[in-house]
Length: 300
Image 1 (cartoon, rainbow, N blue to C red):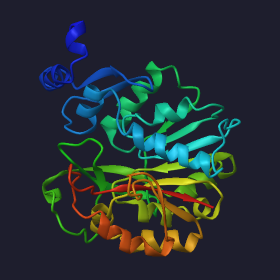
Image 2 (tube, rainbow, N blue to C red):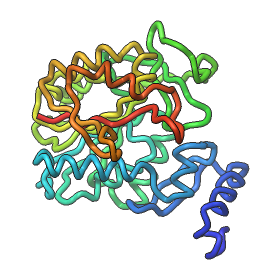
Image 3 (cartoon, one colour):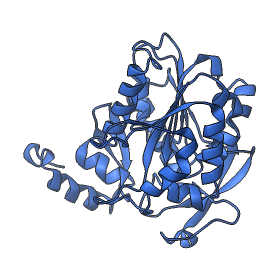
Image 4 (cartoon, rainbow, N blue to C red):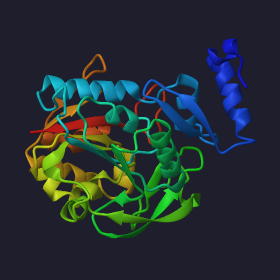
């Protein structure tokens, strides 16, 4: 165990995290949103969440603040739901579940270990009444798909597309896992969620967002605000960048880049210029010098 002094020291926490991987699959850590279970073999989400006790909280805060300023998301959701596609281990799911007046959070997560850790977090925080975990991927067809499992990052499991592009991160060597995929339109049609009850849709799916939007015509046509990751390398490799850009432009939605302003804050973007925006987020990996991705807010 960490003693009280060590528990406050980030380097001691990092050392403990890496040592724990020899003995256990996961660790529990108290974050700002509640108790989260992190995998101990993960150099990105697991380590950062355990060491910093948060993960991408600034992104969540920035998106929710912008939606509030735009009048697209009320302070009290009044019993309306949130759809989260690519929930991972629940660092954002718990935030959504604690929003004022939330009805349900419908959280899709296809990676088996991530889904198990997400369910554990939901149970540990006594949120089972308002969080529904679905072990599914979202895509443009109802099918079984192969996911590439990044051995270093539990949050970077990706659906392998036919004719996948360059393997700059060594993806061709990654283990493949078959998972079930559904169209969001299909889930709405069978009553899994009600678009009329949605207050927000949130997507973080490692480059598969173009395929997801192609299977979500009802969501795109609705007034539900959408927050989506925009990772050009992943989108290009999946053959979905042009598809994503075309669908967003055709939707008539306003687009905001959460990292687009000179100060790193939100900035409006021409919905017809997303292919040009992709050039600003070039390298496949995130580094301290260049950002490989951003998040976009799509609103009516």
